[in-house]
Each structure stands twice: as C-alpha cells, then as structure tokens.
Length: 224
Image (cartoon, rainbow, N blue to C red):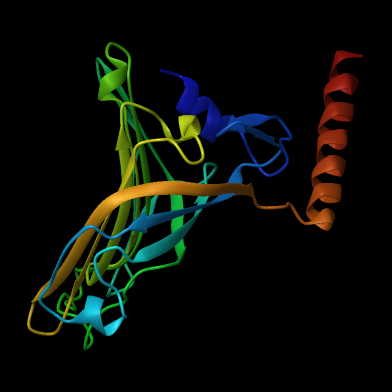
C-alpha cells in the first residue's frame, strides 16, 4: 500500500534513488511515456478522424510527460486550478500525480462545445489505485487534453510502474467534440513503445548536491 506514497513523497528532483520502470533503471522522477495504437473501433460524427486522414488500421501515437513528484490537477476555462488529493480507504490507496499530454490527439473541432467557464480546459491527472486485498483491482490511468478533446490511456490489474514495453495490456480512448456537441470517438489497445527519463539540468543537479551537502553538514553539526 505504501509504494505509491513512497514514490511521490520521497522522490524529488534532488533524490537520486533508482526506480525500475518497464525493466529500465533510471535516476529520475519525471518520464515521457510514448505508445501507439492501431485504430480498430471508432465513430466519426464530427468528421475529425477522416479529416486527419485516419481510418481503421491507422497508427496513432501519444506521448505523456509523467511527474510522480507533483499532484494531478485540472484547469477550467475560467483559470481555476483544482488539485486532486490522495486518499486511503480500508482496501485501497488512491494516488494522484501529474501528467501532461505532450503529443498526439485530434484536437477540438470548430472551437469545441464545452466552453463554459466551469468546463475543463486542461487535464493533468495521473491516477494510480492500489488494492491491499486484490491486485486485480489495481488501476492506473493518464488523463490529458480537455473536455473538448479528451485522451486517456489506462490499464487494470497493475500500476504503471509495472508496465512492460511492448507487452502490457494498456488501452487508449480519445473523444473530441465540435460546436454542435457532436463527437468523434475511437478506442483501441495501446502498445507502449518507450519510457524515457527526463534529464535533470546539470545546474540543478549541482544545486541539489550542494543543498544535500548543507543539510548533511547541519545534521552532523547537531549530532556533534
């Protein structure tokens, strides 16, 4: 139950512990996940899919930036930012983290439909649910885009830290809306193509090393 909380609360940009994701050991807490789907199920009431040159059998790629040190958020059209709060129940640990859809997606059509002040302009929500009693109840999802063009990749029975490149059963769902409220939607299995750590800038590493040194010196001085 404590794995996700350890990841987010203990891993920072200055903490160089090793995490293993998809068989790769990295010294970072920020990653880019890239996956591809082969479109096999869609409805295209807005024409956005055909206008993009896509059809059954087309390959579509998505990339998400994932930062396990930050909380997931959503931002509405009026600029209000809401943070998703972690929680724990009798049987589940619910952990939110930050994601950002950095490539992929059809985009909204004709300005979209959900443009009122309370509708979501941008989702940056990662969700990791861990069950203490039944691992098959585990759930993870990356939610990006907006109310007008929503992209989600998700899987059950595992955390994203257990995803394996090329083999894990991950699904993708995208929906987009035009100004009349009509939608285009497609879904498919997603093949994880790569997981890459985002490098920490050298200057930041030096600053972090210096900060850790000062903290260590202060701690030693108190002991002495």
